[in-house]
Image (tube, rainbow, N blue to C red; front, side, top):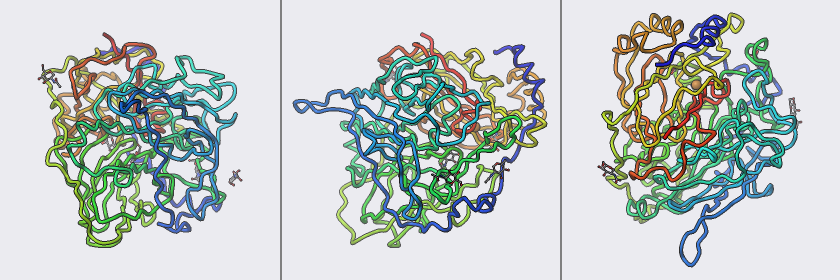
Amino acid sequence: MKKKTKKDTMRALLFLLIFSVVLSWSPTTWAADTKLINPSKLEMFVDELPDMPRVRGFNIQNGVPVSKSITIGMFQKKWKFHRDLPATTVFAFGTSKKVATVPGPTIEALHGVETYVTWQNHLPSQHILPWDPTIPTARPKMGVPTVVHLHGGIDEPESDGYAKSWFTAGFKERGPTWTKKTYRYHNTQHPGNMWYHDHTMGLTRENILAGLIGAYILRHPPVEAPLRVPYGDEFDRPLIVFDRSFYTNGTIYMNSTGHTPSIHPQWHPEYFGNVIVVNGKAWPRMTVRRMKYQFRIINASNSRFFRFFFTNGMRFIHVGSDSAYLARPVRTKKLLLAPSEIAHVIVDFSKSTSDMVILANGAAYPYPSGDPTNDINGKVMRFEINGQHEVDTTRVPPRLMKYPSPDISSASTTRYISMYEYMTPMAMDMPSVLYLNGKSFDDPVTEMPRAGTTEIWNVINLTGDNHPLHIHLGLITALEQTKLVELEEFKECMMMKNDAIECQVSKYARGKRKPVPAHERGWKNVFKMRPGYVTKILVRFSFIHSNASYPFDATAEPGYVYHCHILDHEDNAMMRPLKLIS
Ligand SMILES: *[C@@H]1O[C@H](CO)[C@@H](O)[C@H](O)[C@H]1NC(C)=O
Ligand SMILES: *[C@@H]1O[C@H](CO)[C@@H](O)[C@H](O)[C@H]1NC(C)=O
Ligand SMILES: *[C@@H]1O[C@H](CO)[C@@H](O)[C@H](O)[C@H]1NC(C)=O
Ligand SMILES: *[C@@H]1O[C@H](CO)[C@@H](O)[C@H](O)[C@H]1NC(C)=O
Ligand SMILES: *[C@H]1O[C@@H](CO)[C@H](O)[C@@H](O)[C@@H]1NC(C)=O
Ligand SMILES: [Cu+2]
């Protein structure tokens, strides 16, 4: 296993490690600042839910789909988040400035047909949000650095949007690992839901907050059509959900004073907004027919978890989680989504007992130990159910997609990944830096899986927070979650030695086992790591729908990353390099 480096020891000495339990602050601080909009002043359910522009990722030539090259720009423009909120300056993705939206266009790609995207940066010289030079951050001389990652994509490293492959307007300045202008999306993986978003070193939370996100759907009609789930633009809708706060003049609010300004002048451990936005509108409404709909719900919040439920008790029928279909549908009344997680559900409005239903949110923030939701952030959007019952030929199929079940015996390597929050005495009870395995992003790469293999990762959450872990390229299946007993003793050892084996993790991981919820048992791109638990996951560095090897060199530079998907953590710097070997 990993030996402790001199640097680690130094760090251990430098930081007084305390593990915080709660990072909460009261939402009333928002109202206290009169320049911030009071969310209760924004009438709910007045804006129609937009369907973002759809951009096809393939051409049809003589009746046959062929690959396509598209250009998507990032533009600064104005966006109306609510009827009564002045237009907000945002960063928006679009095929032109005029049609750019927040979120950006939904890219619809076809299995087996490559999509090439030239991501162009048209952003001005200054960022619209405050940022922090004391965390490891891209630092061009001028301009806003950006780089785009396709979350859930199984693609070559050169097109994966490595954090240091950023570029500014006109590709004028480029990060140290920048390789090319046009990204290649192979689309050879299983069908399902992905999303694209900025991934710039130290600025991901800012660039996403400013609007740089969008949905990417990979379809495979020969295997999906027989399912006969609801389809077509009307009945198949991405819902991208995030939280933001605004000044009364419409400007996006981000605190420009850090929680420990002497260490980090601007950085905060978690961003929470008090306005819930779906597809770019605050608390929108959608008129639906008494039929089944397919929703691809993407949580694009920086830090907010959502526990969705319908106020009339209607159920979600899960057909997929993150990018992959489940083996069988799972019916639930509640749906907990971590940042960056995707719930792929069918909702049958013919089963509704009312003409109107609110999609609500009951997740505490920070999740799970923070403040409860209230009347305002506890609501998400409203569905208005119109008309009579109609003939609906779509269905909820009894079986969905069968992918190989996790096979522990096939695992080639076992790793231990520990999550730490470091505090300095100055930071009081707030973390000043978060790390994976006690290492910074620039420490030499330690995770080097072989392409085509499956590994076991034991993820040890030693913090008070639930950290959604995202591994680029690989797919995750959670095997078990075991509570750590005598946690303080174990933490103490880990703080000194940073070595799970030496600290006899197996001796401590013998508490209660928490079953993995049925709708999260498939192959996922993100899994929530419960605080105080060891979560054993299988990580697969190969396709799940076939035994073919990757149609690209996964070992190429600059490699991949894995990280916590609470963006404020990822930026400071709960992210590590991941280098595949052959
Ligand atoms: C909006 O108000 C905030 C807070 O007063 C201010 O900092 C910002 O410059 C204003 N933005 C515009 C576009 O007026
Ligand atoms: C901004 O953060 C600082 C430091 O944590 C805090 O004192 C202040 O209240 C915050 N401002 C708002 C409006 O929440
Ligand atoms: C969305 O994701 C963020 C960050 O990953 C997470 O903190 C938040 O709880 C999630 N919200 C929902 C509704 O899933
Ligand atoms: C992949 O290989 C395994 C073991 O040889 C086999 O059982 C499985 O059917 C193969 N899967 C596909 C999709 O060909
Ligand atoms: C890390 O996440 C926080 C927040 O959910 C939990 O409170 C901790 O219990 C968890 N720690 C582990 C080890 O999972
Ligand atoms: Cu985290």
